[in-house]
Length: 133
Image (tube, rainbow, N blue to C red; front, side):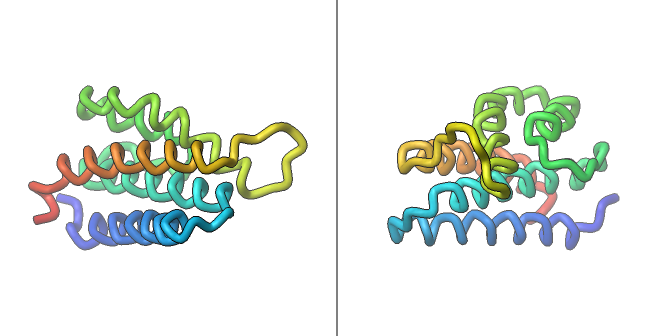
């Protein structure tokens, strides 16, 4: 049995990333790359919380699509999150280093990142409710 406190720690860290991104988003800060990065980080931690809660193959990676595949092995309904993970995964690397190619850091993309993260958050919290409460 997985320690409930460990799951709650991962969820708390995910919530912190999500709230940090939301504060900047709601204040209309123009730091779109950083906001999207924190939405990606929140999604990553929500997925990892699910993986840990179900004693699945935990991997120290940032690839949301790969993490999602691990979740799908346990619960095929996670397949619905594939477009969201594919969208958010690009914000991990692009926001951390200078890039010399076109990027999509705009208010519109930030709104899409928020929506994608909310869908991931919602499904994870729904699935973990029996374990965490």
